[in-house]
Amino acid sequence: MLVNLKHSIVFVFILTAVVISFNGSLNSETNNTAALNPNLLDTITIQANPGPSNNGGSSNWAMFFDLIAGSRNISVTQMTTGNTASASGGFNVEVFTRNGTALGGPVGSGPGSSSDGWTSLGIVTVTQGPTTNGVSLVFTLPTISVLAFDTVGVAIKFMGAGPRYFGTGTPPYSTYADTNLTLITGDGRSAPFTPSGSWFASRAMVGEIRYVISPVTSLGNTGNVLPSNFKLGQNYPNPFNPVTRIQYSIPENSFVTLVVFDYLGREVQTLFNGVRTAGIYEASFNGSSLSSGVYYYRLTAEKFTDTKKMILTK
Image (tube, rainbow, N blue to C red; front, side):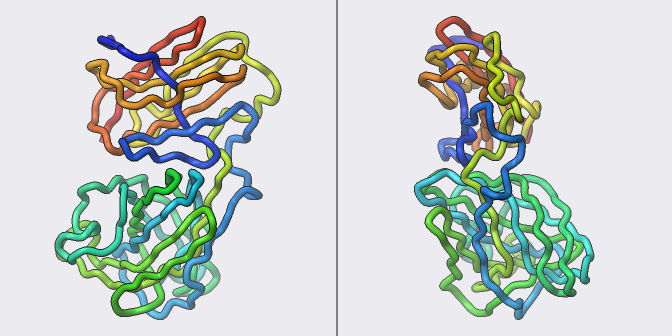
């Protein structure tokens, strides 16, 4: 049971883009009218180096780049990338992220020389475009969330094909930006997350990054139907690593809070604290900076309180 709760819990996040909170959590919030997946009409594209690629690597190499948000929270959802696969061939990439830059540093001690600080978001399948040694088709990423004014480092590790990129030599890196997001590319590494790999800077990513500012997850098409009762749902997935979603219902305008606690009852993060209109909401919580273990989240409203358990497994 939760002990010594000192605060009422607030609701979380997934707002119009996605939120990475660098005190160790990710949060964002969505009302009940959005669709389950981001609308492609809301997708914004940043073109990286147009290529064609003039160099390339082998399977198990990785490309590193930074995502820096402007004044809005964003969610990177898709990308394309240069690679060595045959025309229309398939391969996999594993997506890693970290708080702060992914670029630079000595070969033996830079961000890419160790798995410390990195979180794998999962492995996704990629299909090559119509040209051998060309650029892939658009593929969907595990959502990479970037809080306004913060930096998230990304590593894309190639499996079954190698990266292809543009450029040789040393920094400065290549920078591509719009008013919402800055993409800085430059480092390829032949043995990612080990001190024996080599940096290859500046190797600019050939391809593009796609992101959204509108919600990337929500409760589906609930229309104007309002809930009849207060309800705090079980987070999903559970166990989770590192991101999970929390759903709750508010049948009338209320002051509500949603807060996450550790197993000792110490507050980890307040996800929401304010007035909510009647509706169904979803929150997302990122435990990437937390230790594995049992955590609790509590929703408190003027006429309701409920607490549920969730398990972070790394």
